Image: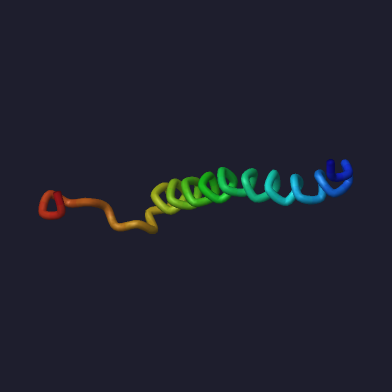
Length: 49
């Protein structure tokens, strides 16, 4: 068996990597929401639909 220190050394970077994915998705969604609220994005018109 490998030692416990080596095991956690490999485990923790994966935990950090997996945890950052929802954070980046949430940041992207909130940025889009803020852009809509501040009227930065063009609104859809009848011709666009």
